Amino acid sequence: MTPLTAALNRARGARLYLLLALAVAAQSAIADQDPCAGFSWNVARERALFAAAPQSIAAGRELRSSPLLAPDRLYELQLGDQGQVTMLLAPGKKSVSDAAYAGLARLQLPQAGSYRISMDQPAWIDVLADGKMIGSSGFQGRPGCVAPHKIVQFALPAGPQLVLQFSAAAAASLRVTITHVD
Image (tube, rainbow, N blue to C red):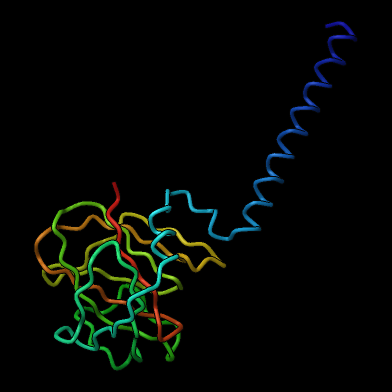
């Protein structure tokens, strides 16, 4: 390798390093401006729903008083003190605070598939079918983002009525939406 070739290679390497550093800095600056920009899933539908006015509804304290939710709507669930909510099964996560809020809702889907349950704050969501918990297939969350803050994805069946158990919420009001993943 000649001295001229070595110098050209060093200059190319320096330019490449500079371009990579600028790209990382630009991506960081964009993420700093919008805390909701960091989701790796396409969450355009969830973000659009969270931009709409929510339907305010009281979450159930027991199953028979729980509201029936529908996909593609934004709800503002009014939760109760977690100790006063009768859960069908123990939540998958213990509350870290005695001051946590909880509530129940029901869901009946016309078609089976992957669905996302999105919330505007840290809270725990369990989905029950036939008295058993359905495990999530993935989740994402973004600190500083409330539109939405947390998204949990489930493979859900059609037909039978599902129970949604919300728990460990820090506030008495929880905005929630359910979307089908295409």
